[in-house]
Image 1 (cartoon, one colour):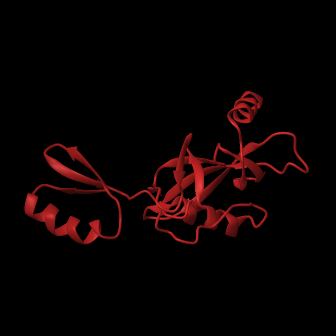
Image 2 (image 1 turned 135 degrees about the horizontal axis):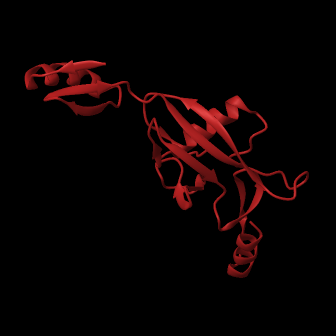
Length: 156
């Protein structure tokens, strides 16, 4: 723990750090306390293989990083850790093609532009409007009707 008491000292020390890492600043008796940056993202991902399982479950992975990562990057890192994990990878990484649609913490988003910061825990599930192929991979050619979506939500 480093305790500083002058604004000029804080600025000189913080500027080089801010470009590469996220830091937390707390007040301690008139000075500024710097805490160690977060270095992990906890990702709980939906796992489901319809050929072997009746229902899905969440599996937790720890991704080591000191910088924010896109959801697509997190999925790729999880696939590196567990090659049986099924996910799509985006081709545009600009938020335009829609091939990276995924549900993050209950909200449908574009995974290539959605960022997760170190220290955060995130739940990654398949997009809710499409039939699940396996894990978080969905079949974009078969959108679910409103009736099918409601039935699937009741089953979960």
